[in-house]
Image (cartoon, rainbow, N blue to C red; front, side, top):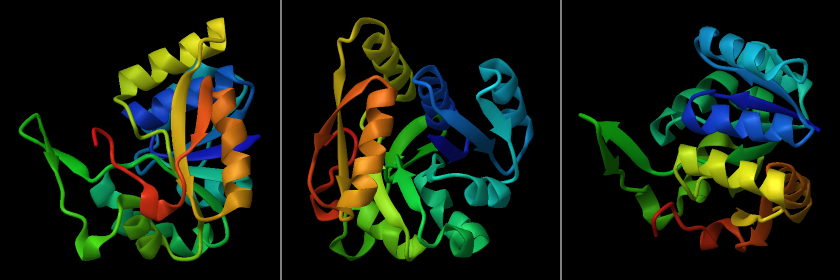
Length: 191
């Protein structure tokens, strides 16, 4: 499958590594093209770089691997291009201040992916890959790919067809997919 990643930092970069190792193609993008370019060089022929807008148009699934607070900018800059796309949301309502992880409040009594869905509009959202730290994501996925000893990876969605597509990616990344229910049932990392 061809997966676009907006954001190639800790989570996005490690997710790209796992997907490429699992046989998928990745299209890497970010606001600053230097990170995607370096990662594509590391990953080889199954990785390319494009602008975020071009990446969205060129792929089947888009993973938005940015800080939770960056979603309004993503929605503003790329919301129209994302409409109708399957979108993976690994984000958690946290930020980093002075080297410390700080939880952020989610307005209106919503879960994190429900709130992100409101921001993004008519996308086919699946929340997954956000239940562990980036280093653990990579280590757990690589162990599953190498040994078949797969860690569980929960996913949540209100769109069963989109979830089925993402379940295949969860397996490719080296995990055992576990249906967590709808977006209203989602929990944030650490809960």
